[in-house]
Length: 283
Length: 283
Image (cartoon, rainbow over all chains, first blue to last red; front, side, top):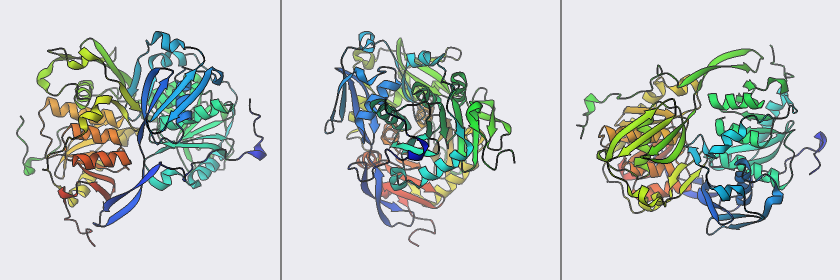
């Protein structure tokens, strides 16, 4: 287990890498004045995930961290729970394939009985049994969120050069500790971005209990489920939320904060972790 | 086939119905000042789609038009192509199940060989073969889009009372003709919203070739693919786009307009349908 940073040592561990090849491409468009403009757009390409010899799913992704995406997807689907289960991860960029090999055949493959559940923009894909898996799970009651950290985090994240600022059309997810962002992932689907962070955390033994998860995307059921699977006690978004997302967070004791813009936000669950230290509180 | 409206008769055919039960629920939250607020949030619940006796997929949806969602999903996946194939549609609200029954067994069920492809927020779900199906498809070269209509459409859509204005956290899709919105659907995933419009169009014999499709969501590959499947020549969004979305639109001769806010927009494909009649053009 990696030794946790102390507050004074907190710093970015992984930022968007705008030099990485293939994340954007240049295209021409015609603007409202009739003039041609050339600009960067996000790359979107299929990445097919195999678990040993079984094809599981094809994700549309920007393709920057296929290994983390694969491992994080499997972790958040409760298919693997420990990196010791993983024998190898092979990625073929030309084929758009990533293969996660495990030391032992997994129950999942023996039964193959689980259905894929999905919806459009809001949901991504979850297996049926995850809903049951999540029931009764309660996040450990540690973790704090100072109101003042929320402003700091927004500033640091928004000022960070990103694919979003360069090309738009992506969502961002950021793992934070206290008032410092640590790991910033982006993707065409926010579910890919959160899965990439889950994969990074598993492969690098990152402790979840003192972390804060920030996303630009909406707090729908699946984002809440993934955060609970990752054992992160605090989930924050600048976007809105659904009734089921809030309900799942309350059942699990997850601190859920939505509609965060500047000083404003809405705290929906897990009030016990909030420290009201900012000037605007109770004004 | 329904007789098309002439311009003077154009009017809304289906708007968001804010009186409909179960689309939103009231919850309490604590705002940034520490005060409790009560407000409406979007309902998100699973809807499982059966094609005859085969379970196909579970969508997370607001649940307002399960029959249109089911039929539109099957149409956009190229599983059904004609409403005459449909024998019955049964919806059980308590079970969250919709069953589409066809007169004959479909090829799809005989082979069951198609894989489900999906990604998170950006993609929803498409079957492998749809990518092949789309290759070589070219939208008929009719349809016009006057630049001035874009401003009219935004005003009419933005002023229309909607779930988005009431509770946020949904995407909207609007089928339009000329400068008039006709059918406005919302859902937690924009793919559900577009599928509901596809279902409505199929069940009511709505001609696609003179229509304009507006969405609040990003123009990713799947939104472009669905628009091509629906034979609508013009796709417009206030959001951004991906490289593959643009590429698919260009191959199919689809007119694609993104980043539309007020007078501004970016025309990415299908320039031949654009009529530059607004004052700002070529200023």
